[in-house]
Picture 1 (cartoon, rainbow, N blue to C red):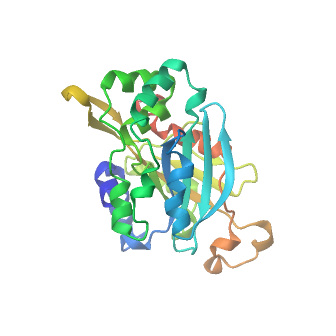
Picture 2: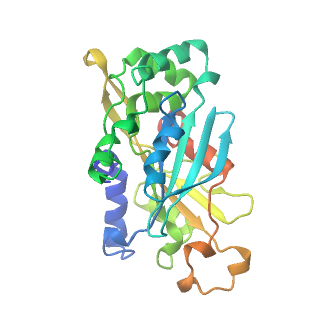
Length: 286
């Protein structure tokens, strides 16, 4: 989280504003709904590799999601205790891309010829954390990045960022009155100058109306590519989720609501638009 905050200034700005507005007193009062990772769906990598970390720590693999237009697969993982965030891991279906894009991606990922987690002591949290910030392949060349960007912005993001934390998510429904709905929280965010992803609308709503999500637009950062070239690319972002009580728990007092009372899991249509928080169409929108 410390590295994530350094790369996503919005996080610091939001937390500071929440404190100055009396929403929270300390950062650790915020409940993290979920964190998300992006991967390449190739041998030795992808969901089947990265999931091993979380399964090792007691997470349970849950629902499968497919994003046909973006050529992605995803699963979410339920934590062993509600004090921990859900995990959402997606992967690019590399074999569905053009031959030229596949050639670029494999030129990097073929450097990984065995599951890198085989070399990690999963019982050592510090080693696991270091792994998530360790490059898995050589530093990309800028022309490769731009070529991938023109076909799959997801592919371009992963080829440069690898397993870097894509986003973390503030649970809105646990906040104080006046800030505990997505609508109210979005108004608060925009009042402090935070730009929101408006793909599919600023508020993404599940079919059952019980999961509402929004997200910031990823801030750009100066990326250093091979051959000393630099280029502004999309970094990470912040997401916000409001989970409403399931119908059978609608009468439970809001102060007594626990995770098992609330709408769980994810929604394909919502997530599809949240992915676009790192897309050029959002970043360059005025």
